[in-house]
Amino acid sequence: MKLSTKGRYGLRCMVDLALNAMEQHVPLGTIAERQGLSILYLEQVFSALRKAGLVKSIKGAGGGYILARPASEISAGDVLRSLEGELTLISGGAGATSEEENVIERCLKEQLWMKIDEAVLSLLDSATIEGLAEEARKAEAANVLVYYI
Image (cartoon, rainbow, N blue to C red):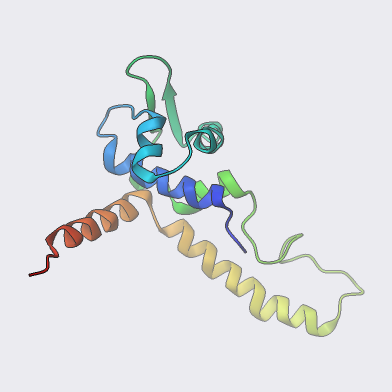
């Protein structure tokens, strides 16, 4: 499984919204500037997030984006699935078998690949946007307190 730029940027932006929205819609340009990303690329990312029901948008003055649900109810897995599609190591589904499949390949699939998939999916589904935002807050606070003499 390799995450695309779209998935990585989408997750960053969802955490950014959780940190900065505070019940107000955030313009996409503001998010793009804060994250150092292209607004044109983020338009594609946010279109997919909106279609998946993860963000809401308002057009016009005072418009922008806000999380569609509380950050505690949105997982990293939700975000990545909306942007990446199926999250798996083996294309075609980890459970797919055929009569011609090699015994070694079947063992690898059942004893390794499927277990890795399950562990990764479990981690992604348990990591909430709220939790990631809290970790970002802590890291930012620790970073601010560091100084050199």
